[in-house]
Length: 209
View 1: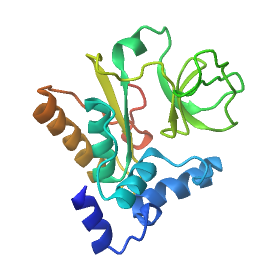
View 2: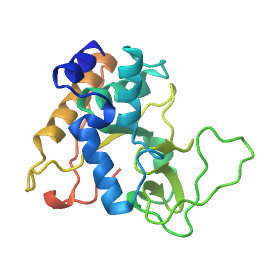
View 3: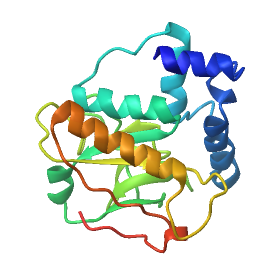
C-alpha cells in the first residue's frame, strides 16, 4: 500500500479520481451508459479512496477477496471473482451484458427475506439468465457465486477499459494484470491457473467455463 500512496504522490494525483485509469472508467461508463460514478463508483476507485485516506490496506475480508483487491489496487483497474462450481450449477451462461427489463437483483448485504429489485435500463452487468450477479460491472455484488473460504475453484476477471491499443493482441496492461494474478495465485496459494483474454478487438467473445 505504501507503493500505491507513493505512486500517487510522485505523479501529483490528488485523489483516486485523478488517476488516468480511474478517470477512464468514470468517463467511459458515463459516455456509453450515462452512469454516475459518484453514485456507482467502480471497485478500483472505492479501494483506492480507502488506501489514500487510511494509508494502509483495508479490513481483511478473506484471502481470495483480499488477493484480487490487491490486484485492483496495484493496477488501478476493477477485479473480481466468482465461485466456479456455483456458476456451473446454474443452467445459463455467465454474461457481461446490458440490463434487460426482466432482470432482478438482490445485493449481498440485503436482509434474508429481501425481494429482488429491478436494475436501471442500460446497466452494464454480470448475469446468469435474469439473475444479476454484479451491477454496473463491479459496483455491487449478489451473494450467488460469491467466493468464500470454502471455494475450491474460482474464476477471476478484470475489466480493462481500452487505453488506445486496439488490435489482435491483448494490451500491455491486460498482460500485466494476468501476470500479477497468475504469479500471486502460485506464490500465495500454490495454485496454477490459465488465462483467457476476451474482447471484440481480439476476435473472441466467448469462453467455456
